[in-house]
Image (cartoon, rainbow, N blue to C red; front, side, top):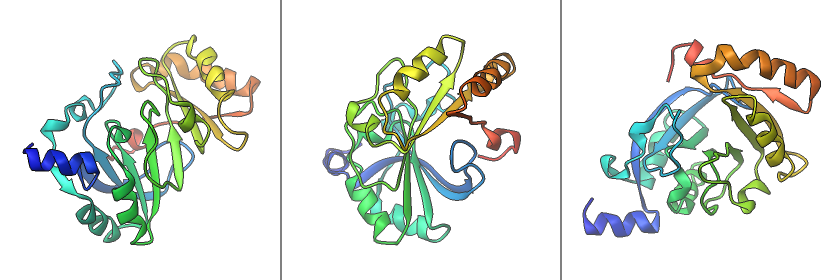
Length: 209
């Protein structure tokens, strides 16, 4: 990344873009809906079970103009999902302004580990133990999606459920590599605690991005 690009990335006028693609939202509240995905490079949260570790190093992904990204999105969909990596490592306001100028509904998937920037229609918070979410993100999240790796994660999920607003949708999602082991635990937990919903990574079952 050149020094000039770094300045523009810091301003949010460029973002390190790993990939962008049109697909079906596979998990959480909006499962089954068509959306354009923007995967932003850069993440230091360090989940050991992350399935996109190639996104972690922002220097591997080209700084891309946010207006170009907005134009690409508008060709395919009126809904966009900004994910990562961890998009809130960067200033997201210029990107969301560019998308909003196209009349696009803007969603984000975040760990909440960094201060909130950008103007979002839907915030999906998926907290990670390595870097806890900021209270400011917890308070405005529309969706809390907790990944269940083992039975201890249910207690951790409940701790975060106490911190979100009363309208936030609550989801428990099995970690993909342990789905067979933890799915019976999740099923039983949701039956006994119906404020929670089950989220599945349906895009993996459908063999799509």
